[in-house]
Amino acid sequence: GDSVTQMEGPVTLSEEAFLTINCTYTATGYPSLFWYVQYPGEGLQLLLKATKADDKGSNKGFEATYRKETTSFHLEKGSVQVSDSAVYFCALSDRGSWGKFQFGAGTQVVVTP
Amino acid sequence: ETGVTQSPTHLIKTRGQQVTLRCSSQSGHNTVSWYQQALGQGPQFIFQYYREEENGRGNFPPRFSGLQFPNYSSELNVNALELDDSALYLCASSGTGYSPTEAFFGQGTRLTVV
Image 1 (cartoon, rainbow over the protein chains, first blue to last red):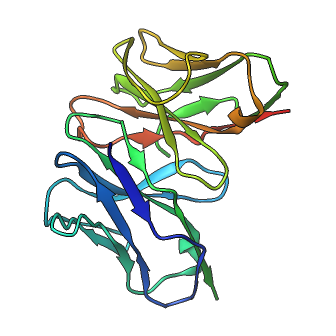
Image 2: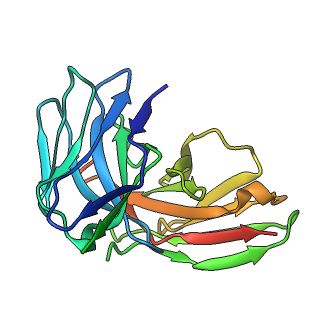
């Protein structure tokens, strides 16, 4: 079945550092890929998405590119802020499967001043 | 603010009891999906309701059941609660006419089974 693997946390960074969170997936078809963010005590918020190979999703300074050849969707941000401290989830959804996601285990990011 | 609301936000139940969690979907959305998120883990798909019918189920036992109402709000029912059912339960709404791959999540219900 489909699966998502992302790097374990916590990832601890200083403010203005570069952030990368690795995510790889296994899927039989051509899924859409997502990054969701979860702040303490809250639900999930969509951060960005990509629906086909070579698409780049971007939002709030975060970027991720759908790499079919390496089955990856790594999240990057050039300069993190303390407010970026959260748990980040990589997820996939098969075509036509609205709302059905396979999530990774999540990566906690801690940004210190 | 996603427009998806869940109630209650927290509750504590005793092992063996039954619980009902509620979700109001975003206006115009006809699909609700439920997820279980254990502490420190990613959300796991429980099931989905589309136009009041179950439309897919994850690897959860039958004591997890649900309903969707004509206004597309939804309930998750769990019978014979076990300690391992302690988790954050999330609902997500999505629907035709919008980005078909996108879903909006509520803030979750934190269930503690003692």
